[in-house]
Length: 179
Image (cartoon, rainbow, N blue to C red; front, side, top):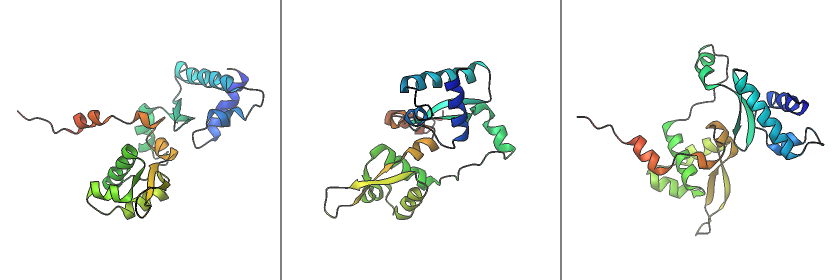
């Protein structure tokens, strides 16, 4: 491996969150963003070809070294990994509404769900999964909510375009036909 790839590996190992190409480029002032991307590709191929238990993935606008999915269950059984707190069904439903319709107001969320969303929004804000991104240009100027990079990281998404399309969800959520 090149010295730049080794430097990136050390930085990614030490980081608990995805690191952007720009942040990684700051490690070596002489390296261009293109050289950093090439070194990341070299590192990703190294992990893939050598059969490592970790992989380099692009997630939430950055790069992170993560456990390969096939080892996750065993690591969780041994309780070696810290597990993020699970989200309730109501929180997941609210988060899905925000992800697909962002920016969205609390009133819009409550109208669609048919229940109050204040406590769930507070919880999602505290977890850093959503954030206030502005105010709507309507009477009362209600707050607008949108997802954050932590949302992308939590669900291992590179960008919002990786969310399932509405037509894919309709097929997946359809009740099985019994004969």
